[in-house]
Length: 93
Image (cartoon, rainbow, N blue to C red; front, side, top):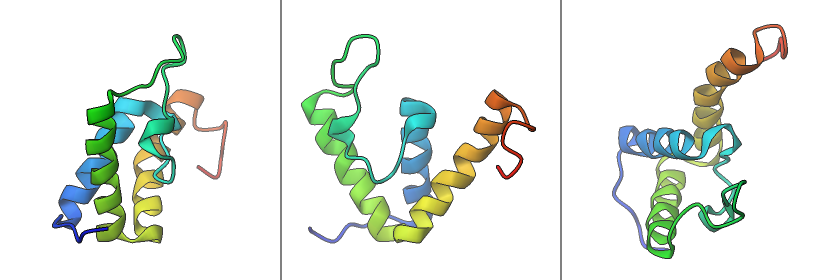
């Protein structure tokens, strides 16, 4: 894989963008091509968009590292989970 040029801030923006597009089901380890629309069963992204987004998340992995990208994704999703499910639903969240 070629070396990417992405700052930490840019990598975090990629994660936030994918969480916004895919919702709480986003996980950084899931290939972009695996995401499908639940109502239709069709891919969430066109082949070109899938390729572009996969390159971006791969680059974000390189920039943030494995624990870093998981921690950032979790810390971004956690307040959304608490809001959706209620603060008492998952007290450890």
